[in-house]
Image 1 (cartoon, rainbow, N blue to C red):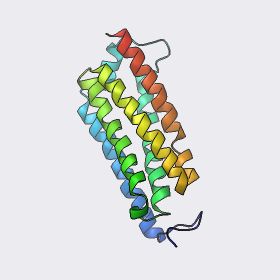
Image 2 (tube, rainbow, N blue to C red):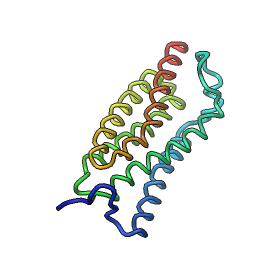
Image 3 (cartoon, one colour):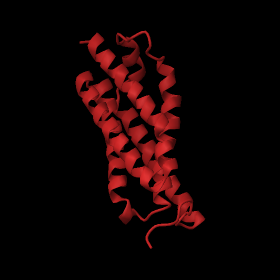
Amino acid sequence: MTGAPPGKDLRPRSSSLLLLLLLLAICYAVAALGGVAAADPGSTYRSLERPAWAPPSWLFGPVWTALYATIAVSAWLVLRRRPLAEVKAEIVLWGAQLAFNLAWTPLFFTAGRYGLAFLDICLLLAALGTTMLLFRRTSQAASLVLVPYALWTLYAAALNLAIWQLNA
């Protein structure tokens, strides 16, 4: 039999914790790289024409800090139940959505390429939705923990589109 029964962790507690820490490090490294790649996102954001429903710039940091943790936890929930060899496609898609996530910040803030950033965030949403569907096969919790990320990213896509239209 492959994998573990539902609710059963395949890994010893210490290696499961190390795996979680590694996944958190990966997600927060993506966040840090995106931040470094963006010249000054706060002032850039404030200088743009924005729709009335745009959030204040100070809100993004706390929201993304929490969301990157959920991204890490989702992969951890899958990888602690199944060996990597059994969930390779799921983890590749998980990595793809992180790559699209990383690409968005410099596209939007540094390059000012709002249309290309919108395409990127749409690809991110497609990769994220597929990841959620695939994760659900192994862990419903892994899929559900990504719902706030998906909702925020959908909101961010709508905001990206509105900013692109207002600043064209």
